[in-house]
Image 1 (tube, rainbow, N blue to C red):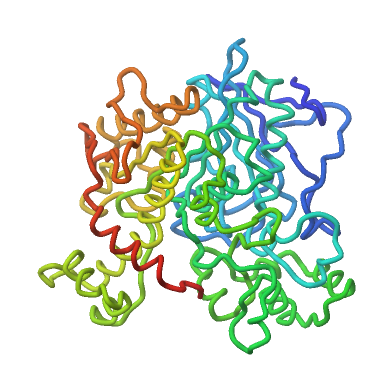
Image 2 (cartoon, rainbow, N blue to C red):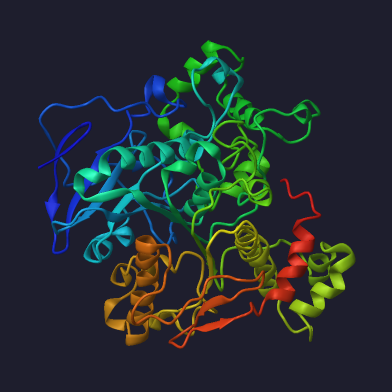
Length: 510
């Protein structure tokens, strides 16, 4: 039995860890607590069973997700899980994992996120849930009278979980003054949000961003309200998206009655058809979901890029990178139309990405979208961190598991996660994994553990990874198959320079 501030729990022992699952860090966000900042847990009597995962946040599951969650879903989902090393030591480094999923899918219970290897290596691993989709990112004029911050409830949940860590982690040998927050995709973007917003910066000492973007991951960081919403054009504010959603369910008005009716909607109606596959259409055509974090003036005071540009982010050691075949695509019917998007630099982009004219439209669209959405923004964040004297390590993950060589042209989005957790057997057929796969997982995992322990990823037996010293590197490139790793100026520098010129001059709102 272990006693946390809110009450006693009973976990389960594994080879390397004592595991506590389904610990509440906030009151269930249901009923009157739907679309309300997370509330404190009411302490419980007796011993709470903590041997089974609590529900993941309600969502529409999606095939093809790299860390799928298919069942045990509920609006009542604000729980976390802990893997405590099985030793008598104190002040272990703590790592808090924020899952990805486009802010509409995912959960901390995925088997890929098993924290056993971290506990084996002396790290307390915490995985968390946070509200997704319209449960987590929603505004409406009727919320104006509510007490506390409004709108970015999913980010508030993440902050609430980090506050739980500060209060409780020393009770199981974790060091609240050595907390690394890390995440991938929407989780990586969440790390950037936490690092760049004033209210969260004191809750951790290191940050790891895996394929988290760095400009506006979901294309637009909308304000809460906008005068443009009265022009008859598509919504330009979070409130306008919320009004569209309410109207679609026959709810008019902006008063407390409208809010009561919204809170009375079945949870399944809040989810609707929303998941990672449908997200672009839901926002761009139905206009009834804001798409993720927006500028509310308190939880999110300004876009991530703006905060980093001004040096207003948490000045903590930073590890940041992408995969070499990461997420993204640009839409065009022809190559000419695709290049035309780049205006005055169109021919330079053509010469860089399609010098002999033989590259297919689909391949070009993916490469350009990947660089626009992931690679250039990650470089931007790394450069700004360097500019403001943050110790920074920059990487590009390219390892492809044996069973996928020949099928994958590089490492797709999110395929680095089982290497980070050293849980390859949960993602790939264990009988196909070769020595190179195992070595890549051991190395990438060790880099993360060392970084959490000391603020530097290097350690015995690992290829040396120097910290970033100049805008173009060095960059650690983990290869498609096996060591040695390349340490060099980013070979994609000229391409990303062109993309940077494009993204910094273009209004990219949907």
